[in-house]
Each structure stands twice: as structure tokens, then as C-alpha cells.
Length: 275
Ligand code: MG
Image (cartoon, rainbow, N blue to C red; front, top):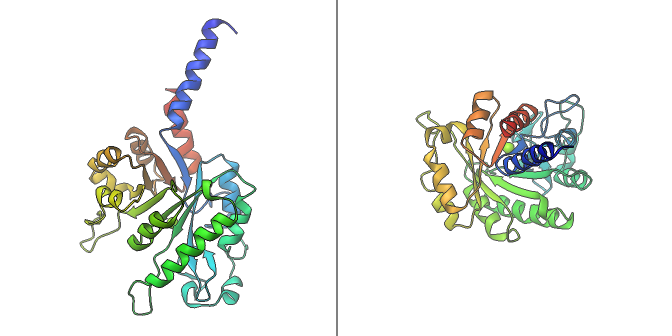
């Protein structure tokens, strides 16, 4: 190899190293579009790991008898996880034939993989529709204990739409644990907006380490990125599947892109690094 080739190779490596710090890809509900996979399945975690994605996201609910299950919706096959006992929930199957995973089965599987886990605790509600603070408190405690017992603390981030759970995670997780507040829900007037009392500054004061914004909310208010940068808070963006959205995230230097199209996103990040 000539000196010029050596310098070129070194520069290419440096470009990739610098770029690698700018965007990481999180598979939304695992790599569930892969063959034989399903959203939030064990296979979706293996598939996410196999393509070299930085992270894999999944959703957690606590059953009536305190068992943590992984599922996006509040119900599976008509069974409401938060209202039923674990024996009945465990009988339910995903679309790929797997039984619904428990958090414990997901973490056990992860111990043999390299991928980072982005654990979303779903907001729990009482039958009258009000927030079930007590269940969320128990879930936070149980999740942190289980992640600790499995030796996975350095590979787990937490996200939640529940302000209570997010702040509790920020207060009780080991120092340095990434905890992100999910924001950018549809408001009562139909627009996608940000919670007024959960701005980056509010979150920073509560010890929350980052923010996880819906793409449209951030496109409408890109100045939030500057506020996060000033506070040293990383920004994750959900759920970015279209090439124009992925490109927007790359061009604006967000830290994490959560996507149902992880391979396309990784390819676009690599292409940008090589330009
Ligand atoms: Mg989720």
C-alpha cells in the first residue's frame, strides 16, 4: 500500500469514526420486518443484533400479578395485560408463532448478544382511566432490579411517555443510565405537539438525560435541538421510516434514529459518511 493509499484509508476510517458518533440506529420494536420475525418478539431482537444495529427498542407492561411482559399494545389477542394474571397472558402467541415474551426472556436472550436495549415502559391506567402510579412505580422497581441481576445495566436505556415513570427512572436508575422522555403526541386539536411542562430544560432539571421526539414535532420545532445541545442532552427521534425523514435526521445531526427500516437507515448513514 502506498503512502497516499494509507492516508486515504486513514481518512476514511476517521470519517466513519466521527460519523459513527453522530447517529445510531434503534430498531423500533426490534427488526420485525425480517423473515420469521414479529414486533417485540425474541426473534426481532436476534435479527436487530444480526444486522449490527446499535439498539433495539421494545415495550413493557406489568400484569395484574406483577410479571413484566413485552408487547406494544395494552392487549394481546383480546387479553388485557395489566388486568390479567400471567398464566393466561403467557398462553398468548405473536404473529410469528412465538409465545409473548416476558421481559426476563428478552433480557436472558440479550445477555448472549451485543445490541443495546431501549426499554419502553408503557403508561399504565386504572379502570377509571386515571394513571396507575402505583403500578408504574412497581414496574420501574422490578425492571431496574432485573436489569441489574442480569448484568445488563451498561447496555440498557429507558424511555417512557409517562412523565412520572421517566422522572422516577431518572432518579432511581444507576448514575449515568440514559433515560429519555417520549414526546410528540397528537394533541386535542389534531396537531403533533410537545408537552409544555416537559421542555428539555424541565427534563434536565428533573435529571432526565435525553429526549425522544416524534419526527414531525421536531421538524416543526427544530430549535428544540439547539436547546438539547446546550443542555448536553442527546436526542432520539421516532419513528423514522421514509428516506426524506431519515435524511432530515442525518442532516440535523440527531443522536439516535428509531426506525422500522433499520437497514435502509444504516445504509443512508454510511453513504453520508463516505461522501
Ligand atoms: Mg415503543
